[in-house]
Image 1 (tube, rainbow, N blue to C red):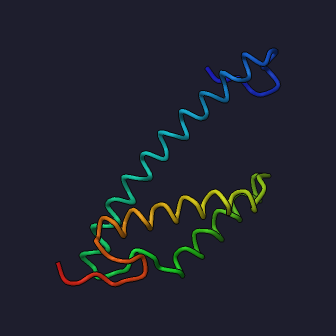
Image 2 (cartoon, one colour):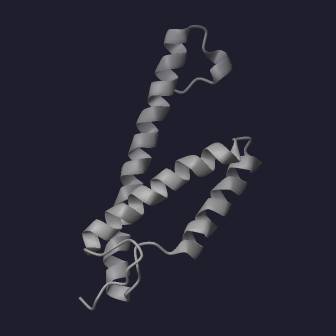
Length: 107
């Protein structure tokens, strides 16, 4: 059962909740990595490069907007997502055997 921050009476209770959230974030990142891996396969098949600048800009704009709407610092969100996106693009490029902005050859 999750407690709200205000329901935590001690730092030990608060830390347990933060640890639980961290575990959930890790699980979500693992799930996201699975989609990144699938994207590499599909991009290779469709002749798309790992990095598509327009899509990166679209994702960043979306998460900034969602963060702001929920009271989270959009700059922090952009920093976090930029790191996630850059990691994913590098992973796709390695998997595809191409540079991040290179179009793959026919499979």
